[in-house]
Length: 118
Image 1 (cartoon, one colour):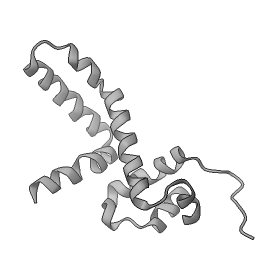
Image 2: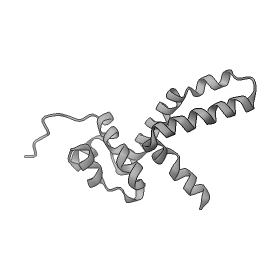
Image 3: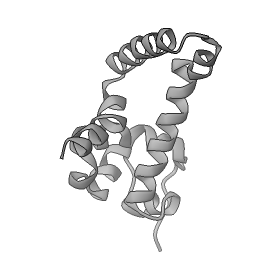
Image 4: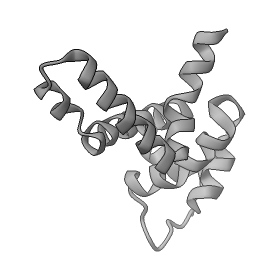
């Protein structure tokens, strides 16, 4: 009979641990074994919380986009009457946010930019 770990990990802890792995290796080169090792849990426990590597990755993206929207204050940009002033402010905020959070940039922006270039 398989023993469960003494500490049950929740989805947020797993996502936190997996962010750096996906950011460094990308989706294709990241294995579930790598994710389990980074989270300090078994692959079975990962699959207990997420049906697949793809679901884990998409959950991580959703989480990053939601946090980014809040932390960058996107909703405040709607208050600008001048579109170009808002665009300039948004660019500065986004640049500083990703400079401070390079793993988020590598996860959220870099793959999409590379895909558009191909």
